[in-house]
Length: 417
Image 1 (cartoon, helix red, strand yellow):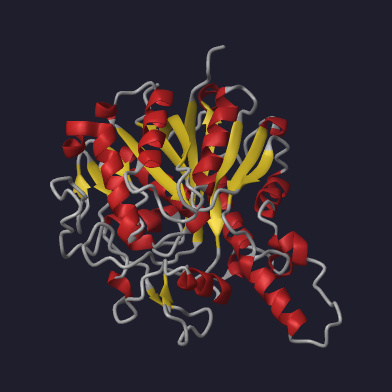
Image 2: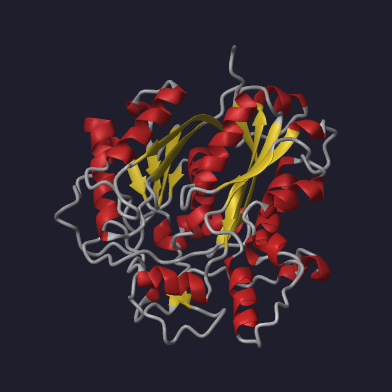
């Protein structure tokens, strides 16, 4: 069968550097850091007391107070970004067959704050089991997709993918595949995460995964820099409307870009560390290129996973050189996590948006906070250090990797009718 073309017709973002897509993109190309001292709780006793939090956000500006109380923070974030994307696409008011519009979302952790609060309430009491009736519905990771579908009456495929930090790219790839196979006309996809709380920070600190640069939070996320010491935890949400090309054209939708390929692979190596030679990362990029029927030389920009961890950045660099060969030196490479921090299960969604807007606007966002070259990394590669760069971006590849060895890549191209 002939596969259908899949285009991007709507975007929504709620991030540590901007609460709308426009604000997010402005923050990216200006090199804005979203890192600061944690405001949501007293983190003074934690090894890391900073994060990339969503700022100036009042949920009741977007969701009725009574309804908001039924939603964990990660679902609140999901609803806000999905609402922006639906309005941007025009699907919220379009006459469409809603049996053929779905929601496929991603979240690595789900309602961690809800779980923390309920456990704390129970264990601080006398042992009598008094639990909020919304405890389970607020906590479970799939509930974000459910709420989005309920709001818009979307009765197509509906579920959540969970693959740690690869979750939302897995969701995007699943949505892509269902549309091009003719199983849906459009899908709301993306991901959300809200793990900036005591359990989230404490857990990642125990893993020694987080930067402890408490004296300079805004410079702590420094991918590919010699002095990087771990990632900076972020929170927020990103939403994309993926749509069958014919369906989009029939209703006169604007089109940002075309999604042309997706790859998935496993490291089969370690619970949290990447394969030191980047074998899984190499394989997933090759898989995405094969799926897109593209040559590596057709890629102009790679938005890397680039978490600012000592091992991860080296392994991903090796993988890029293995896949792209000499063309690697023609690429622009950047890690937007240097600005947003690491949004875990939502990382792939907001980084896909960065790729889409780079393709649309021919601007590559920077990797900020670079000071010192790492001798273990090939610094002849163009990591787009510290300042955005203008260039023609016909195709961009987005990498997202997760604990457990989950690897995903997605490729976006300029739309040509």
